Image (tube, rainbow, N blue to C red; front, side, top):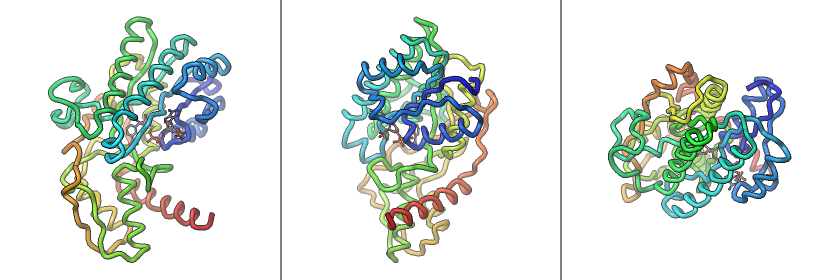
Amino acid sequence: MEQGNKILITGSSGMVGSALSRCLSKSGFTNLLTPERIELDLQNYSSVDNYFSKNKPEYVFMVAAKVGGIAANISDPVGFLEENLDLELNLFKACYKHKTKKNLFLGSSCIYPGNAPQPIREECLMTGGPLEPTNEGYALSKIVGLNLAKYYYAQYSMNTVCPMPCNIYGTNDHFESSKSHVLPALISKFVNAKDDCLEEVVLWGTGIARREFIHVEDAAKALIFLMNSNYNQPDIVNIGYGSDISIHELAELIKMKVGFTGEISWDSTKPDGMLRRCMDVSKMRNLGYSPSISLQKGIEKTIKEYIKLKHKRKFE
Ligand SMILES: NC(=O)c1ccc[n+]([C@@H]2O[C@H](COP(=O)([O-])OP(=O)(O)OC[C@H]3O[C@@H](n4cnc5c(N)ncnc54)[C@H](OP(=O)(O)O)[C@@H]3O)[C@@H](O)[C@H]2O)c1
């Protein structure tokens, strides 16, 4: 990508899309297209086609997706599958029709089978057992996206790279909504419990599940790296930090960083989700990218940002 190229970022109002915009702007890219939903309705092909005709993007970061935590995924599998399929089909079709130079389709580590050997290698896709049932609709939609990338490459030589990130957290995250993932939800729970002088915080599951986390700035840099690299094929690339942590340890770490002195209790009637999801990131490292923000540092930064946000909301 050159600094003057027209670069479309879908989902630019979200956590990952906004980090990408900031990162690209910082690196001197001046021609970023960052439409809101009202200007570009990704579920409507005419809207997508018209937008591409008018704005002629050369590089497309397909970041927009319906995203949510475990409760949202369990309660609305139809919504996760349907909405994400709509926007993927429309975007791939428009990228092909308007002859973009290179695209990036953002997947997720939940595409791997629930019992995949750990750390999970890219080759595990569609092998072994079934998908983790708690987010099957979302995972299936991402698998279709990967296959669209593969088919458009095989049939039309359309160049799309497909990074598969682990859990992403950080600036612009969702802290207190049905979209919250585990790490921002833990931050808001502990900060709020401390502010409200509570004696106990109740958390979902048993805490034994293990997850891998990458800070959104590192994730955005990895995506830009891949788009800029001479890696020009749809074979997936894991994006992660390379190590995982149990939810129990994560909760204790966040509790300590927040300074909450009450107790943690675990509601084991609620699901843990997949027991372990840690990715083998050697392919990403061999291509030349490694993240730099440690989980400790990233959590400290995110706690500060949440406290600032909460304070700001109070005075709005
Ligand atoms: N967060 C993670 O831990 C994680 C991990 C792995 C992969 N990912 C992937 O990263 C991407 C971004 O996730 P995120 O965490 O940044 O989510 P997010 O903060 O919820 O942002 C999602 C973005 O997509 C847009 N969007 C959703 N549905 C849309 C639609 N039908 N039409 C137009 N825009 C739509 C949203 O627009 P509105 O603001 O209008 O809603 C928002 O800008 C997703 O593809 C997700 O699968 C995320």
